[in-house]
Image 1 (tube, rainbow, N blue to C red):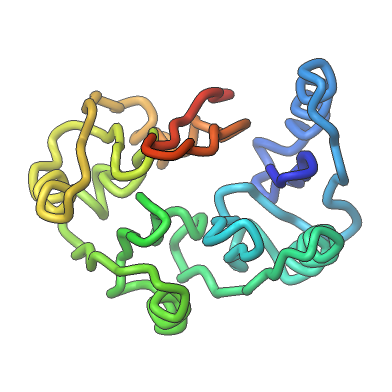
Image 2 (cartoon, one colour):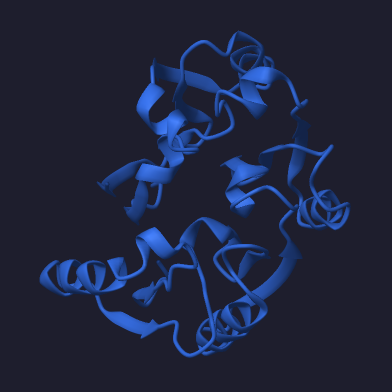
Length: 216
């Protein structure tokens, strides 16, 4: 999603190819403008795009989003005066979201042992503090980094990951709820994989912004 409408992804995953048509129809029915669909040799999946600021997006390139996909996203967002910074996604990781999660405008959870060294530097340059997440079994096996941000420093995550939950608490992040996800984990996914942000409310003075519409 962008401030002016949606960019429909083009899945690199063969079993998920063709989902784009259904998504485009649903967006149209909801009255959300569709700005473009990634086409040609380009592939792009939404979990590779993370907004740092209204005018700045990190886009991961790897097994799911290729260089041509990044190029097309950069052109689309460039017309909105949004800068795209391309960063490599580590081998064996599906999406940028798998190693980097923003929990507030100035706080990120990062698997720094895997992430390209440029990522923490870019975050620091833009005033985002990094919480280093270690490669413990709850992260590598149980999808503890595959959580959903409900609002600034408020998350829902998989249960059975006390060390990660403690990292949240130590950094002022509230775990609103936990839930078992055995079927998603067996499919190499998690909560973040089944949640798409359609719209976020901007916080008013003295209020905290919140997630208001989630399309699963």
